[in-house]
Amino acid sequence: MMMMMMNGWLEMTTKGQEQQMPLSNGNFELAEDSSEPDVMINDDSDFPVNYTTSLNPTGIADWRVIQNGVQLLTNNVYLPAPSDPLSLCCLHLNMPGYDNTSQGAIQTILNFIPALDVLYNVTFDMARDPDADFNEANISMQHSVYMNGQLVDQGIHVPIFNITDTPSYISWSTEMFTIVGLSVLTTLEFESLSINYGCLIDNVKIFQIS
Ligand SMILES: [Ca+2]
Image 1 (cartoon, helix red, strand yellow):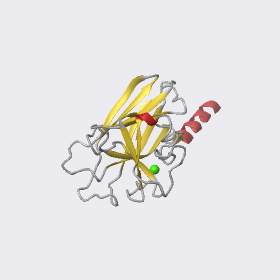
Image 2: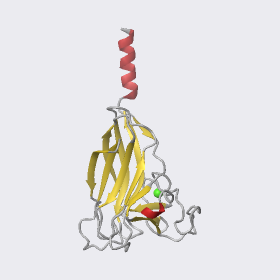
Image 3: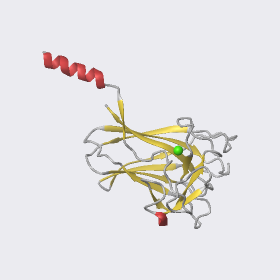
Image 4: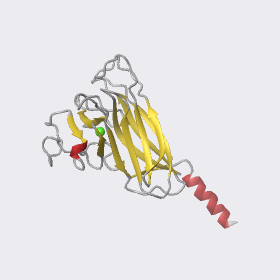
């Protein structure tokens, strides 16, 4: 009887709660100036700062650029997502003009092992780059999740935007997808599916669902 009560109490205290798990540099604030390696980006850096696959493993801390190039944009010019008004940088998943194809992709390895059969929500802020021509169709991005190197989850995200968007007024929205832990090394990947200008992304977070 006492054990049943204890179990019931435990369920009540954990049910519906989410625990934020570590995800390093999900806000893309830790980055080196690609033109001056070992110099961290600060207010007097020239933006955008471009990163290509050749700059790995340095550049954007804890992330690897795994396809073409990406850009860090300053939130002095590009309105930050409402979830972090003090953000200095957000990431553009494309690098316009780079080697005829600008579709970038980034990857990070989670620095914890998602437990077997436990659910985790990954959330991030996303927007359409307001510099994109409104005629440019199909601006979107894709997330992929790899566990022990095997693709286990993939999804496409299409940003909500307003035709009046400008760099100083961006329609940010928050996206989410859920993964199931397999008790192995887990990698998150975000890839642009757009030709020239693509999606902005910031504030990547992961939560364990109790
Ligand atoms: Ca940021």
